[in-house]
Amino acid sequence: MNKFVTSIALIAAIASTAITAARAEDGHDLAAAIEHALEDGHYPVFKPRNVDWSFAGIFGKYDKAQLQRGLKVFSEVCAACHSMDLVAFRTLADLGYSEDQVKSFAANYEIEDGPNAEGEMFMRPAVPADHFPSPFPNVAAAAYANNGAAPPDMSVIAKARGVERGFPTFVFDIFTQYQEGGADYIYSLLTGYQDPPEGYVVAEGNYFNPYFIGGTSLAMAQPIDDGFVTYDDGAPETLDQYSKDVTAFLMWAAEPHLEDRKRMGFMVLMFLALFTGLMYLTKKAVFSNQPH
Image (cartoon, rainbow, N blue to C red; front, side, top):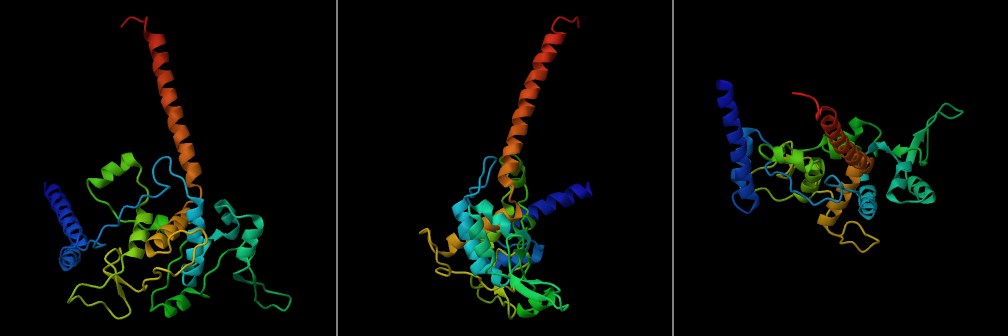
C-alpha cells in the first residue's frame, strides 16, 4: 500500500513539474519551472520539442539532401570539438556521394599512423576506410580545452540521449513507434540557449539552457547561429534549419540501417498477419466436423 501511495505521489510530482514547465515555455514563469526542477530533481526544465522528422514512423526514411546538409554543418562546426570514432568515411556513400567525392572529403582530415621505418608516428591524409578523427589527442586535452568538460563522441549520441516522456505519453509511444527522443532532444538543446531568468545565477563558464538533461546549464556555448554555414542547395541558413539538418545526420550516424530495419519489420508484421490468418483457416477446416 505504501509503495502504491509513493508511486502515485511520484507521478503527481512529475506531472506538476511538466505542467509548470509547459506554462513557462509558453511564456509564463521560467523561474518557477526552474525551482520545480531543482526541488524534484527532474531535468530538463523543458521537455524536448516534438519535431516532424522524415525518418519518424513505421515508414520513415532519411532525406539524403538533409543528411548532406547535416554533414556540412557537422564538419564545419561540430567537428572542431567532437569526434565520431565509430563512423567511417566510406559510409558517406550512403548519403549519395560518389567514390571520388568520399575520397576527396576524407582527404580533408589527417590521421595519425605508424610507426614508420624509423619507429616514429606520423600524420597522413585520411582515406575512406578511416573513421572521423578526434580534434584532440586524448580526453584530458579535450577537457582542458573545453572548460573541464570533454566533448562527447557523436557517433551514437542520437540514440544515447533521450528524455523520459512519462505517463501517459509513453503508452501512446508504443503504438506510434516513437523513437525520435534523442533527435528531439538534440534539436531542442541546439535551439534552446537563452538568457537565464532575472536573479538566477549561472556558474562562470557555463551557459543557460532549460533543455539540458543534466541541469540548467552546460559548459558548451551555443555552437551555431543564423548564417554560420553556407548551403549550396538554397535551404534556409538559419539556426532552426541547421539544428534539424545536423540532428538528422547524427541520427543517421547512430542508426545508418534504420530504413532497412523498418522495411524488414513491416515485412515481418505482414508475414505474421498472413500466418495468423492461415492458421485460423486451418483450424476451422480441421476441427469444423469434429464433435465437441
